[in-house]
Amino acid sequence: MIRKEQGMKKLLAFHADCGRMGSLDGRFVLDEQEQAALAELYGSTISFGEVLGSIELLEKHITTVTDDAGFLDMAERLGVDLCSGFNPLSYADQDEDDDDDDEEVDP
Image 1 (cartoon, one colour):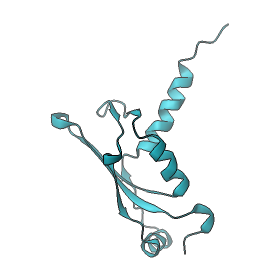
Image 2: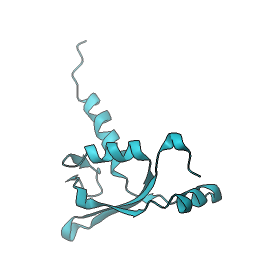
Image 3: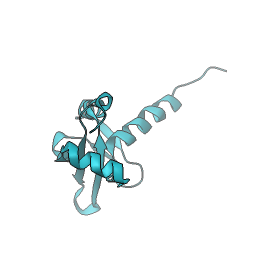
């Protein structure tokens, strides 16, 4: 069984179509707390660096692949890595770190 302190986990898919430039895709497992943090990013601009630049993260970019606790628990116990590609939550953290670098510091 999935540990209760982590909350219910979901395997989510991320897909952002950037037209002729390409698309950004990813799969990742998030617990309830991380899902709430991701939902707070909807409407925010997230920079994916040189890959395809910045996009506005919309709810339509994220879909639930599965929330089957038995499947997710079995994958974890077997050491199956269900995560691949881009996780917007990871890039949002980088944006916050970059903002700190932009602050002026008095000598």
